[in-house]
Each structure stands twice: as structure tokens, then as C-alpha cells.
Length: 47
Image 1 (cartoon, one colour):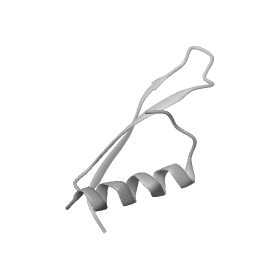
Image 2: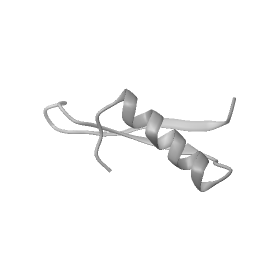
Image 3: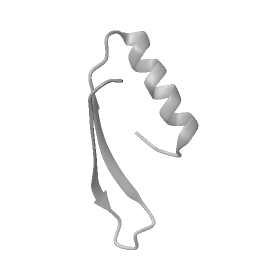
């Protein structure tokens, strides 16, 4: 289990779009990309 910070950061006026902030420490580029792939599989998002 790793420490992370996850918070809601903004919403569109209609509420259709939401933005969130995720902070997590990673050990390597591979670790970062693995986390990114898992996030992509769970939710639709734009960077």
C-alpha cells in the first residue's frame, strides 16, 4: 500500500465535467506508467 492524496479540484458549471488532483510518489518511470495505465482502464479522462 502506498501513500497518496486524492481530492476533487473543480467542476464545470453544469456539473457534467469533474477534475481531480492525485499526488502519489513513484519509484521509477515504469512504476509511474503502470499507475497511469491502471487509471486509464478505470476512468475516462483527459490530461
